Image 1 (cartoon, rainbow, N blue to C red):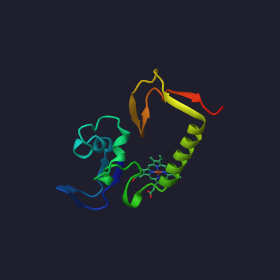
Image 2: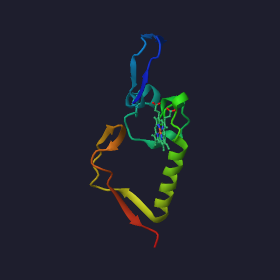
Image 3: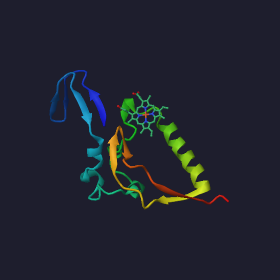
Image 4: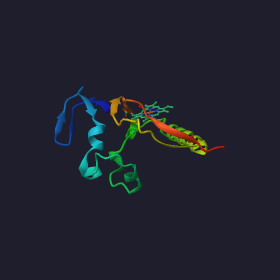
Length: 123
Ligand code: HEM
């Protein structure tokens, strides 16, 4: 979730938000909104991001606007470098022992770990 606190009385859409109100933006709810993501919104489907997105601001893993994550580019480059280092040496697949049980603890995490089978392809 993202959190914000109103520094003055504001009108937000049809809502009057008094000063000092804390607002919690539940991103999980936004990410499951079928009006935005389609009827398969609850399915794990990374390929949905290959299509042109009508509402780019509906997916905000790094926040948006003035307080957007300053480490966004570093994090993305780091992830790509690590992935490139792995795929040079290994092929991998999800282990049959993996139990799909995502849970939220600040970030979304695999409750019983991410069981992955690696196969060395370097030699
Ligand atoms: C996958 C990795 C990361 C994710 C998902 C992430 C996510 C976020 C999000 C959602 C915010 C906005 C919070 C808000 O608007 O209330 C944020 C802010 C911030 N992030 Fe990240 N972040 C990541 C990596 C990093 C890294 C690597 C750094 C530093 C090297 C970093 C530094 C910051 C800082 C300093 C802010 C506060 C910016 C401000 O308020 O002006 N983050 N991050």
